[in-house]
Image (cartoon, rainbow, N blue to C red):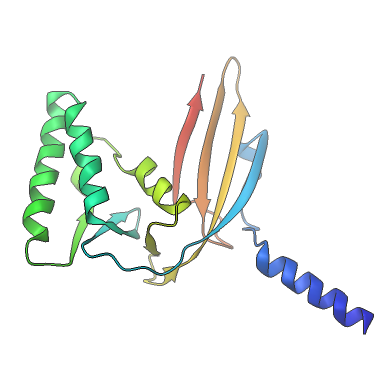
Length: 176
């Protein structure tokens, strides 16, 4: 009976506290690992945003607000890229519930405008994610850490699917 309880306890711990055993922790001097569980949701209007073969389903109005805010603060070359993106999503959403949009629109301008937005959506349980194999992924692993370089420091967050060795999105929080 005692052995059963130990096995049950270990099973519960591994189920509740999963980590991605393939994560490379050597890139950080110090780090923490957290788990997020994204609950299924529906939006009135949705943007399916493709980033590195991953599809993020996010609320249209939040996505549009990011673009509008970016238009206000960029040089003319990047501003025109954002204005074209805004025009496209406004036209595409008319008469549809879901529009498809890709990072490739911004690749020619060499900008990645939605990394922080998408990470905030994950951390606040405001998105749905489909991987490259078209599977909905609800469990997300976040590794947050810092790395000291001479003479500076880098800190950021990397996000993984359980058992994956490669992060699917990352952001820099500090560079000095």
